[in-house]
Length: 105
Image (tube, rainbow, N blue to C red):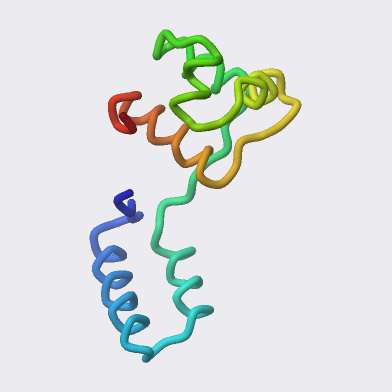
């Protein structure tokens, strides 16, 4: 997945720092700090947002779950607010929200 930067100058700085990290000139902690400063954060999604996203794509919970590689019960839990998506699932939901389901198929 392509990285999204807060701005073009931060993208250039981050890519330079990645090269320095690959050469061993900076450590992992410094690279994590640059990731935090330069990369666009992923915002959480409310249960209503997730349901609206699924309905916008005209998918049932089982089919939506299949696209995300999670269980139907997990999608149901997200939509009821029992659980919150995180990590890769939240990133996929964000991509679908911005670019549509075609972006991950």
